[in-house]
Length: 604
Image 1 (cartoon, rainbow, N blue to C red):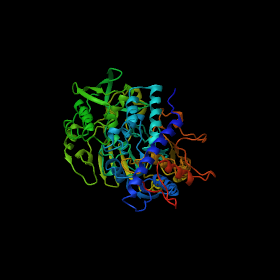
Image 2 (cartoon, one colour; image 1 turned 120 degrees about the vertical axis):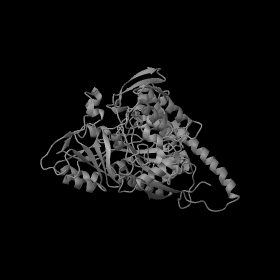
Image 3 (cartoon, rainbow, N blue to C red; image 1 turned 90 degrees about the vertical axis):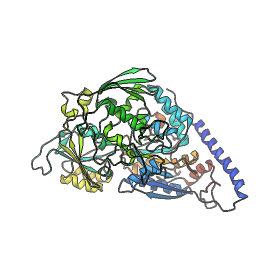
Image 4 (tube, helix red, strand yellow; image 1 turned 45 degrees about the horizontal axis):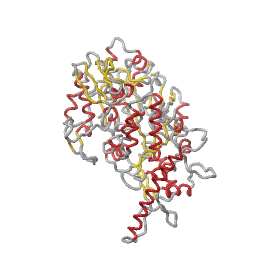
């Protein structure tokens, strides 16, 4: 297999970009000196993060980066803001310079299609919030959908080489999630984990004596208030991986054991061509929504049209796509409804193995959501076009999933009850793949409690008020969890990543070499040790957790050789501390100058 790009060539590209930036800066310097003799200002940057009590990792990474940026001559502020507001600033309003956050994760590297695609740069959601534009990257993103095997690996290698030079996003690490669970009431916590909705459907119930809690209720701790106030599956600032709403809403198919298996669908048959496949889908019999209305093929067709444009209007009118599930919706070209249970899905150019990702979106009831298509305005949204669908809280959701909404107290708790009309409860048998990962829920409901800290969650677990945490505990709490009786720690890697995001729309972050210089100021080994305490995998690539990452972009735990994004550390090897002169050289290569006091100066 080929696919590697010669590093000399990449450095040449970087040098060329820097030379262009530098030559342009020089022209402006000569022009400006004749009209403005004010001294140049120091480069000032603001890094947005969530507060420490919401997630300790981003602010600690930001502090590490800030120290090294200041050593390199920049002035830096760290601005903590709530998770909801951070996502709104980054994903909807594009109101940021840099942020350090956590991507919700992915099941296939095709998620880069919208994350980096030029045409998505003005859409809300995880659709290119960086404003990044590259014709070369766009071409590679289109081509990877039409190939498979080694050829797809090569396309992604080329893509990583291209985006490494321009650095619209800099990956830091893929965290592990060490959850604490009780072992006296339930078993089967790891197959699969609570990172996915199926993790809640494979538990085994163990009756115990003197149980003061409601029999048959699963008690889960949440470190996130948002689901207690909003259950809109399309609201990007309220959803991360969508696990909780994934229990309320069913897709046509769920990813199980590496492939997409029928779920609401009884099955599908492939047709069309290799370049443009078609799938004929047959729904299961006697499906119904939580309000007892029947689920039909019309609901499915409506869902895909709605995700592509929540206004449901002709294309010449303003298009307002859903901020979530856009990658999947771009795979669907059109849908023909055959009858109440059957429909034909026509795909854009993609292999079947990629096209089937479209089946994983939550199907929603037309009779509920078609009322949310009107244009509206909403405080906190700076985008031009907003529909009710983007801002509706969906406080009492109507889905079709194995659990239905029962009750909620804002900022405190959320309760679901088992849906006894769900096909998991009523089907005589399930397909082998589904049966191996999902059973009839053995408990009658799920009660989620918001818990403000990991220490509090551990106390509640030890006291028997919780059965598990829906999230990973901080590493410092794990020794106590491991020592506690009736508790176990279930640790696993995740598909999400912490990263630095750059708003490329404005200077100085519109300069790719400037962004590249910042990416070199992060000591990933130091972050792995000090921030994650080894409960993570350092990474350079946004697809490091997939089989499509090439050897060149895999983390080398032995530190053999130097990667293009290797930390520019000191020769004495002081951990986490940048070599100031090497860092200044990176910014000089980007066309920037320094004052006599080694302050990094704004380009004139």
